Image (cartoon, rainbow, N blue to C red; front, side, top):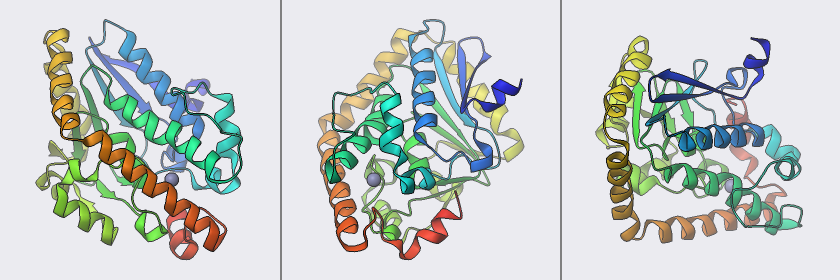
Length: 284
Ligand code: ZN
């Protein structure tokens, strides 16, 4: 039991044909360090490769789904050391290089690369969300096909407050629509679950004590359907987004994101504008 508690991600079968991956770093509000991200990737791979799994739920232990990237790991520069003990999913290289080259390599692999990879898993995925989802936390739920949130869930991208132009997986316009995405970015404001549902980002909002049961009931309903048809339905919807240029938009935004990091490094000597960083760190 002790070793299970120390795993950053728990893998369990929640029901026949339904795998549940559980973020398990509640003492840090499930802040994402390199170890957690690659443990999650391994868990997604395991579920994707198991023909007995039709639906994947992504859940989180503790009161909050995720406070975002682990700013202690980023601030110490350990991201670039830690990723060299993981197996990259992409072919981008240069993790040990100097300056912007290494930063771009890390983020293209561990942030944009992993989130896009999870978005393309050819099985239905459902995010089960409670509490706060802050900045990098959005990069865990947005790749999922369906998002179910409890009434206490809130969503925020603080990147602009920190001198950066939005999280690395720039799916904002596709989650919120263009106008609400702009306000969400410009103001770094908190969206409630009801706000997010109204904007089309959330499928269902339920009471906190019903979240797990309701999510599982949706997963079981979908899991009874033929997997091949589910896979191809997902592929077709994703293709509609991609044919409209989504990949081009995400890559352009990722380039802008790297420019803001390089700018902050030149002006402030760090990746983010430090003015609002202390408040952000207190949340993770
Ligand atoms: Zn970044």
